[in-house]
Length: 159
Image (cartoon, rainbow, N blue to C red):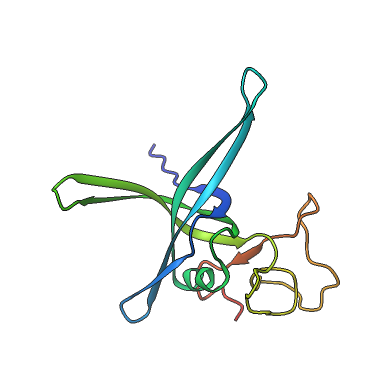
């Protein structure tokens, strides 16, 4: 039996503004990075912290929405798959880089300053199934605002 699973779930803050590039006449790709912080206490009871930095790549409508609504420091939730890039540098050395190809992105937190107003709600981007006239924003089980889901393809997009 062959078993293959390549699925990753991350939440963190963008380390740089999404960089959008046009590939051909219709494809768009966004490249950015996120920082994921881990906090713990060591054996002496002292607070410790480390950050992990991960490159993120998104395609199509997801890339466009990321470029429109996110900037450095924006909180984000990403589901995707790992991809290993391999190339040869100018000196002929083989190089590799592991990154996440985003398949589902959710914008966390409130609307960023200067972002389009949208439906007047408190979320950073339009969410599928969101009601424009809702009395209060949807929340998670912990009382936090529910994150907005960015459709993985244009066929899913509600607009």
